[in-house]
Length: 150
Image (cartoon, rainbow, N blue to C red):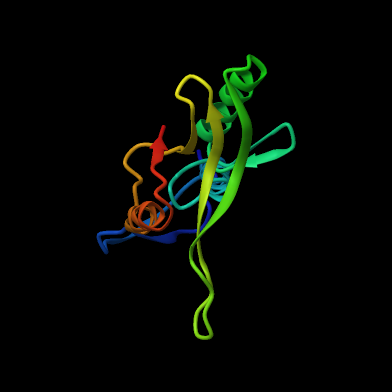
């Protein structure tokens, strides 16, 4: 014989409403799963990336943190120099009516093999937002800088 919690009402996304009887054990399992799911969502941003911290530095994704570590190794090997991260580049200056607009580049470094400065942005999947595309165009128009997407 099961020890039932008093009947409750469950509403599904489709709008169906049903009475539900569940055991205390079943209820505890559901609550545990929902708490875990909530914690996972809390650690993700709007692009479904999980923010991570590596060596005391916060990154917007595991992919970005991994790329940072690769670039650090290239810098130690002497293949690149001047590595910086999260550098703001002004796209539109401040006016009396509007704030300045910036592009924040994930990584900037000088590649000795290509003999040029590389502006790199880590992109995961298909998350090239309209805002990103517009800022990338403004960056090229204003400064002649092309973004390397990895």
